[in-house]
Amino acid sequence: MLKISDFVYEVGAPHPELLLFDKLVPTEYGTTYNSYLIQDEKTALIDPVDPGKKDILLQNLQELGIAKLDYLICLHTEQDHSGATLDLLKVFPEVKLVGSAKVAELMEHHLHIPCSDFIIMGDNEELELGSLTLRFKTIPFAHWPDNTMVYLAEEKMLFSSDLFGSHYAAEDAARPDLSKQKRAAREYYAEIMMPTRRQVGKYTQWTRDLNPALILPSHGPVWRDPDLILSLYERWTSEAVTPTVVIPYVSMHDSTELMVRHLEQKIRELGLEVATIDLGDSDRDLRATAGETLYRSVDAAAIVLATPTVLGGPHPNQAYVALLLNTMRVKTKFMGLIGSYGWGTMVEKTMLSLLDKVKAEQLPAVLCLGLPAEEDYLALERLAEELVSKIKALPAETLLT
Ligand code: FEO
Image (cartoon, rainbow, N blue to C red; front, side, top):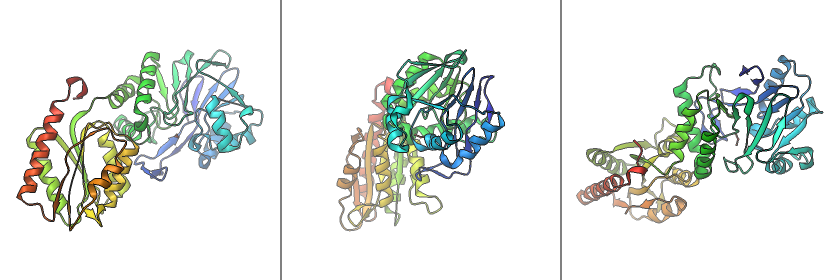
């Protein structure tokens, strides 16, 4: 529990022991399910928590002596935020549910609460609490169709739902480690917000124009310097990229790794940064190496996927990463494919089919039979030269430093 102002408390639940969010995303720093209590003449609670953590929320409300809730405001239906609604309704049967039309619609489907039980709030509509007023702003597809923000104008506080969140349960929520918060925010963006980058960019601009004093997301610590997270989101959601190349790779008998090392060395000689990620590292869960690939791909100019051929197709670890990159719609400008095969390969066709939503220029694949030979190393050098010259030729406004 954290007191944020005389009127506002964070009363939700930390989940520091969580290792995987959605059974998919590694959460090195755990996460939190934030719930915000606003006390005025009326008392409002913004979002309950994940149902597995409802007891923490109820305990926090009890400690603050909350015997009556007037409004339960639901910003988003996904159950890490809405799941404890039915439990709250049992404890506070008089509470009025408040949400956007889309939230009410989805809550009826997900938790079987009738739409008609909701006070529906549209964009710019206000809920009076007494001396304080909450103004609503829907932000569809950040990252679900129902996400909604609420602005508490008198306190200049923006409750931003999933937007601007981070999976980070700080030991001291009042004094989070900023470097961890920034890292967790970038991971969170890569895995949750990146697929709807253009909408998220518009909401970032809207928030910049609003100029809140505090941003209070539904995961992770409050942003006490909104410029910090807004500047990061402006960078990530823009069309611009950094002049770097990311090479996730798998190698079974070292041939593909030899190709990766040669390509990496040549790109470095030509003056660009390269990050290689071993998707076959036996010391790391594939979800961790895939997560690192997404993290590094947020603003990378190019991604080269390196895979051996397994029974005609890509190594399954690389296919998994391609599927993720496609789902997350990376903004990278150039894609490449390299690898070794044993006797035949359909790897290029399969990989292209897995990447159909990535709008990058595809460079010619470099695939070789067995150990790379002299002509294969030369082909890799040509690939490096082409990649680097194309990246350096990008217009200045699309290159980040
Ligand atoms: Fe944190 Fe979309 O739920």
